[in-house]
Length: 100
Ligand SMILES: [Zn+2]
Ligand SMILES: [Zn+2]
Image (cartoon, rainbow, N blue to C red; front, side, top):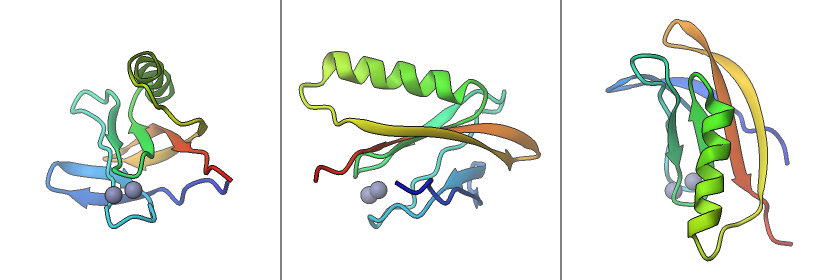
């Protein structure tokens, strides 16, 4: 899988990070006012976190889902860094691996 084409966009709540999802949504995650990680879980199952500790927050989130959901896909994961709202932020993502 190619890494997602993350880019910064302006939202009503400040700058956020989105990507071309492939569904009609524009999934956008924003860091909290204190820089903490915020996330978006798209309708199509892709998740991304933006902010401090994004990768750790993402693994915790997925671990909890795995423990509570009957059907949880396998994910391909990665991370990168982007300047959002004036500071470099951690961006972590987990996209379901397409069943082939
Ligand atoms: Zn969607
Ligand atoms: Zn989507």
